[in-house]
Image 1 (cartoon, rainbow over the protein chains, first blue to last red):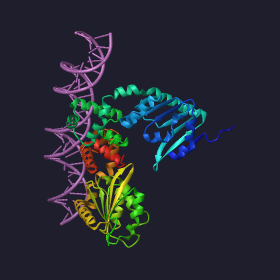
Image 2: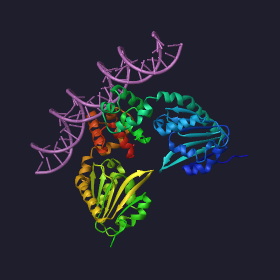
Image 3: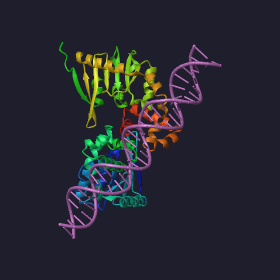
Length: 213
Length: 213
DNA sequence: CAACGGCTGGCAGTTTGCTGCCACTCGCGG
DNA sequence: CCGCGAGTGGCAGCAAACTGCCAGCCGTTG
């Protein structure tokens, strides 16, 4: 049988939901996902619990910079506690969802305030996308290892970002946070790395982009 | 006659438009406005040309940082060319609209993604708000003077912001823009001032906030 | 109880950024 | 044509940030 519409582009979360939302409940083998923001999470995780049907193995990769947001970090932990495998990546990849290695959804760019998504069912293409996902999966670190790395930074990040956004000098901010200057600068360096920034200007733009200021 | 509802709070641009949009066409003496973003401009400048009826004197104060956006700068120039008096302020004030000194609209904070507006018709309160507007008006600089100040920065700002966002050192960015290091740093200092930032982290966050990166 | 690992904080050297000063250049106006 | 004003660029001094090194401390483990 000739299969039609193996590659379909939809615009906006509503259209995506209408087109492919129901398929989430039919997944049997695995759901694998790369998430960059809460925004797309909501798009691919519709109302009604996903795990309510027979539990399906899930793998999810979160963006490291997103994990600076406490609600994200909490969400990732909750997923891991509910049996999903969660990893954290420092790399930037377009958001991707794989269902049973039969269907892939890739997020595109935002145009006129609307994000487009490509829904793929072509077997060869889905296999290719799945292999790329595997590379990203292997390159990412496990949630527990990531949490250990972030143990010192995590509780301080909001206050450090506030201090930076207030324009405070490192010495002033260190005193306000009850840290030595060296340790404050250590934390700032870790924050910069988590944001993927090499300058403080970049860090400010990234933090704003992520809703951290 | 006892006037009711002299102070009303509405939530969202649609509700504001329904409540007060028609009044813009009835203004006869003056429309005065402080704008912080394109967002609120659209709210208080509904479809259908404002000046289509008898031309009403208009005074508008734009936020200096917003003027870094070429579309804003162009818009301000177009208003001035159409007879409005335009000034630029470095200060941050909540967005305000005054109609004939009889009605005032003040923008509030965004809560749950929805901005609230306070519509005021109480004569005493409107007079008070109008007097505050006059203070802001007098403290602002005329558009022409502002444009002269921005003459060197204006054409370079997009590329400087790109260079900063790329994490380039000042020396690297200066060479890329064909400027000396001293001049590049002069332009960066002007950009920081226009953004109202005292640190590069702040500048990055502000630039992102304004849609400049 | 001792050893080890990891974190902190002080110090220091280096890098990058910030701004004042001044000589020079160029364009404009009288 | 000359004088003046404004901008540029080089230099320099200072401030702020970045990161390595090392001693000390604390908690954990054997």
